[in-house]
Length: 225
Length: 218
Image 1 (cartoon, rainbow over the protein chains, first blue to last red):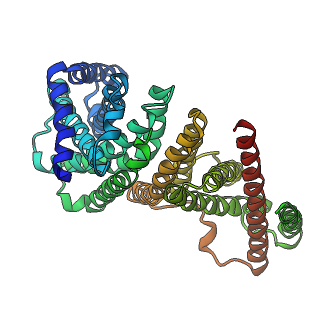
Image 2 (image 1 turned 90 degrees about the vertical axis):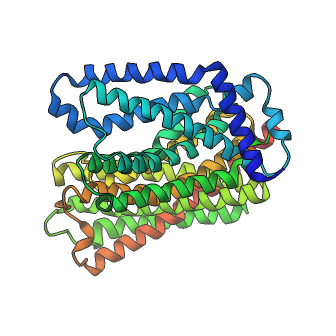
Image 3 (image 1 turned 90 degrees about the horizontal axis):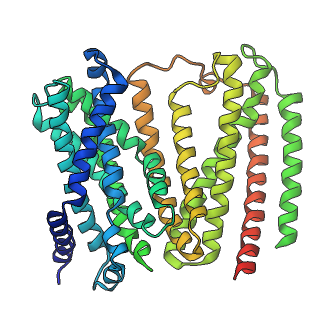
């Protein structure tokens, strides 16, 4: 079985089980809605204040839903004793990692799309002015998040206090990605071309490359029983 | 091995004593900041030693994943602890220096921010180690995190630098931007050597302690 095929099988399995149970997506949708309420209560009605804080809030929303969503990335394997199945899978284990990253990436992009729509509707903000630029920034920011998040989710799956340890590991490492993503989103929402935030996009791409490469190279060591 | 370690300890003591003499006796009073500037002889070596320690964590982590030698894991563990201690010394002395000089304990300036992010990343590293009971598993996971943490440092550095400098050019005092007196440089160098010896001693001690711990638990 080829490497790509093994990656696809892991991805397909996760997508199928999510499509049938809709466990993560339903809860995450509701969670995203609740976040919007919280942001509104925290910042009040003033439109200027909301607009100024919007890029930060947007990414705060992405990160918080990402923490909830990614934290359970290996829950099915752990709870249903399928961890051994992963271990017994033939060939290079990094195929499993890439499949999981792809699944998490799709899940996060979906939740982010929902959050964007919610923001646009409830805060009356025009997010559709430069959809392509926004997609590039969000995509680059999310890949890194999903890559390192998947790695840490696998790490913390077996730890007693994993709900606590997962965000504690992920958030500090994600600071540069968050910083770059917020700054680039801010510029894009102000209508600036992508060239103006080239250095930030470079940083995000570098982070994506670093996290993905490290994940591929080290996942084997994490998966071991 | 033990005698070597003891020698290292005494060398560190001698170096620290010489460093103190240089910092308080020989180095001249800085013209604008006065005696407050002397905290630099503690502040700067502390962070350089911390960076060195985190570099050792990276090398030891890679080497652990490669060969699975328990010694490499102990070295990574000990170095991370020493690095965190020296980073906190750096942050604390920076705050003490900042209060009279800048008028604030803390500002979100580029260097402060990136050092504090690095600090929390390695605190998380130690937390991960503390929260996994199985020693071998803790070693593997920590090695992965040790690699990611080290690779994250340049990302943190650039992101924070751009974040700060694109907003407002640095207006605060920059110790390195003016030519330094030769005695000042000498005091700094001696303290740096002393701190390097001290941290090597700490790491060696901690590695031994970890080994003993594991022998007892085994």
